[in-house]
Length: 277
Image 1 (spheres, helix red, strand yellow):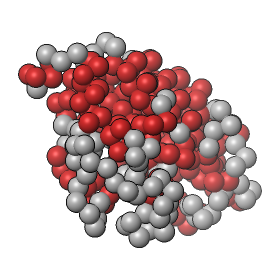
Image 2 (spheres, rainbow, N blue to C red; image 1 turned 30 degrees about the vertical axis):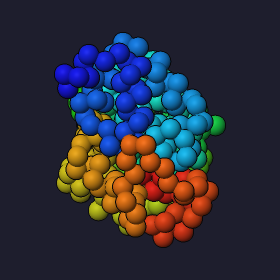
Image 3 (tube, rainbow, N blue to C red; image 1 turned 45 degrees about the vertical axis):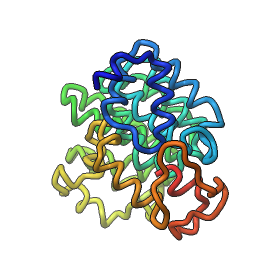
């Protein structure tokens, strides 16, 4: 930690990129503590070369960057994260639903109004909008004083939207509040055929409603983004990202292309599978 305190922000960023996957928590925290960090992280996130598997950092730098932004918690950091979620939808792949709710929710109560505005943008991918709804749900449970406000907002969204898949996402969030007043609205939405039953069926409503808090879908996103840099998580990422090869460490490169089949055998392109995991 001491050596990082003595380094300028530019050198900290260079160190992060050079370490590829294995960035320690201490380095991430030190970057987040710098007043000029957002500017350097923006340079990485807006530069295509850092997203390329054969580029600097083996494409890990942008993933680390989006996990550092919530540690900064400023308005500029939030706006940059929302921009990247929108502009790099394909590159982020499953991270949109598996990680971004945690990152967005980490900005806390001060982000609520901006997130409401963001989720109303109908040009956004429905999975992005669903992830933001999940983040709002997490914030509501972390800040009980804002729960009624967020509940009302999500309830109105369910009434107004026409996409049945997105409507199904919102039902899941509303059920997590365990508010009986929402059940008539939800059942009416099913009766009118406004819900994608491949996502949630009417028969599932009572079951989801009665799930304990720790089993509700939002609960897995109630964690600190710094956990991304923990040794346990890095080791987990190694296993799923490089199952049949040696770990790619500093100054190494892989020959796997972004559009090549993923070596894990999923059948997906590498850029939409283990590259972003």
